[in-house]
Amino acid sequence: MTWEELESACLSCRRCALWETRTNVVVGVGNRAARVMLVGEGPGEQEDLKGEPFVGRAGQLLDTMLAIIGLSRAKNVYIANIVKCRPPKNRDPLNTEQDACIGYLREQFKLIRPAIIICLGRIAAGRIIGPDFKITQDHGKWYVKDGVHITALYHPAALLRDPGRRPETFEDLKSIEAKIREICPEVYAS
Ligand code: URA
Image (cartoon, rainbow, N blue to C red):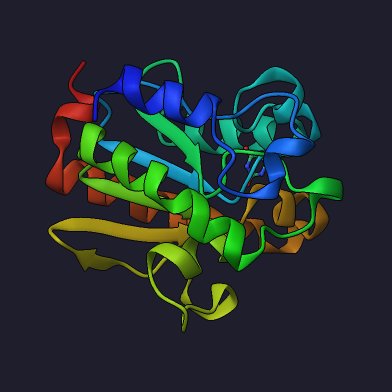
């Protein structure tokens, strides 16, 4: 699938009921040649209105977190979600919705071929790392699947609710920076 085919498939998608309430499909944002990809759970209100992931308050915090380790959506990461349409009232996406949508994320992985995937929060980590993943105990750990290095951070919205988790997240960010320097130092070369 090409990017154009993927985008047009997403924009006309009716594989689950979320199409009925969406304003925009939120496919993703960032550098399509990025070595580092981030995956959240699904668009919220602001994202639905704008058609771009992580543009609300949690998104502002995410941008700050990325800047701490020299990353940005404008330059060297690509950001997508498990589901591309907003679940009503920001509820968790249902398993059936995730199942219907996950193929689009797989196509994004194929097109981008990231070296590192960072899951944002328990929903993304549960899908990508595995159903036994526990965010409170497993955030910051590294997993390898098909040669791709994968980790998870607390979701930025969770960090807004519970700032007490920020010091651990700072350590996790430093671990991500070290992993990037180890396996794709070119990210910091330019
Ligand atoms: N939360 C997410 O998981 N994804 C977004 O795009 C915005 C908020």
